[in-house]
Amino acid sequence: MHDKTGMDSRSPLILQRTTKEDVEKGVTVITRGEGVFVYDQEGKRYLDLVAGVTRPVHAGYGRKEIAQAVYDQICRLPYFTPMQFTNEPALQLARVLSEIAPGKISKFSFFCDGSESVEAASKLARHYHYFQGEKSRFKIISRRGAYHGVTAGALRALGTVLAMRQIMEPLMPGTVFVDSPYCYRCPLHLTYPGCDLACAKDIARAIEFENPEQVSAFIGEPIQQGFGAYAPPAEYWKIVREICDKYGIVLIIDEVICGSGELENGLASNILTSSRISSPWPRESRLATYPWGPWDAQASYGKVSRSSSICILTGIIPLPAPRP
Ligand SMILES: Cc1ncc(COP(=O)(O)O)c(C=O)c1O
Image 1 (cartoon, helix red, strand yellow):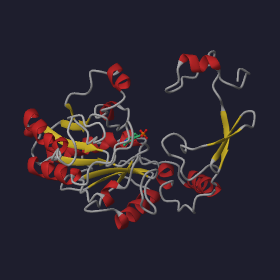
Image 2 (cartoon, protein in one colour):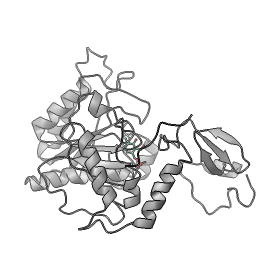
Image 3 (cartoon, protein in one colour):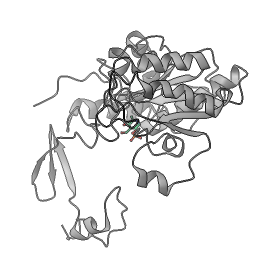
Image 4 (cartoon, protein in one colour):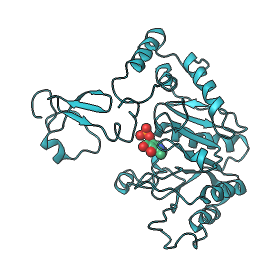
C-alpha cells in the first residue's frame, strides 16, 4: 500500500492507536462498505466483525435510506444555532425518547459523541449541586478499569488504558478511583458472594475520605468494557444507588457502549448517557444525555457545534432489520 493514494510513513496524516512500525509497513485504506463488508483500494473484501471499532456501524454500510434522510436534512437545514433556538429533529427525537426512556429520565440533550456526552453529564451534575446551593461539590468517583472517553473531563474518569491516562496527567482535579466489580480477578482478593459486595460498599468509604460535601457524582458503565466485559453481581448497582442517595451524589450511568443496564439491572440513574450504538430501545438518539432533576439545565453551558440537526436526525431515522 505504498502507492500515491495509499498511506505510508511519508503521509502527513496522523492516525490513532497506530504505531510507527505499522505505518512503515503500510496502512490499508478502506474505500467503501456494503452491509457487513468493507473493501480496500485493491477491492479486497473484509468481514467487519467489530462494526467499525466498538460497534458504531451496527446498522451496516451503504444504507441508502440513512444517506437520503441526511441529504434531505442538509438541503432543508444543516445547522442553526442551538442557543435560544432549536430544530425539528431535536424536538422530534426528544419526544420519541420521552415515550421510551426508563425510570425518571424525562429530559434530553444531544451531542455528537460519547466523550462529549460524558463531559456534559459531569457538568450537569455540577449544575445540579450548584442550583441546590451545594457549590463545593466537584469530585467525580469512577472505577479502575472504566472507559468513559478521551476528552479532558471524560479522561479523568478513565480508569483504564494506563499509558493513555499517564501521558495526559495530571488529570483534572477531583478525580477519584475506586475498585471495579471484577469478580474473576477480584482487586480486593475476595470471592463472591462471601465478599459481601465489598467493592460496592467501599464506595462509601471513598466518599467519606474525600469529604461527602465535595463529591458531585459517581460514574460507571452498567457492564464494564474497558478491559473485558464484566457484568457486576446483581446487587451491585442497588448498593451504589443507596450510597449515592445517602450522600446526595448524582449517579451517572454511562451506557454509551452497553445499553442494557438501566433496564435489566433495575438501575435508577440521575443522568444516563446513551447512544444509538448501544441502546436496546427500538429507536433513540445517536448520542444523548438524559438528565432528570430539579435543576436549571439550560443555565450556563452551551456549545456551538452540538445539536446539529443532521447529527440528531441520524437518531430518529427508523432502521429496518440488519442486512445479512
Ligand atoms: C462507556 C463509554 N463511554 C464513552 C465512550 C466514548 O465515546 P466516543 O468514543 O464516541 O467519544 C465510550 C467509547 O467506547 C464508551 O465505551
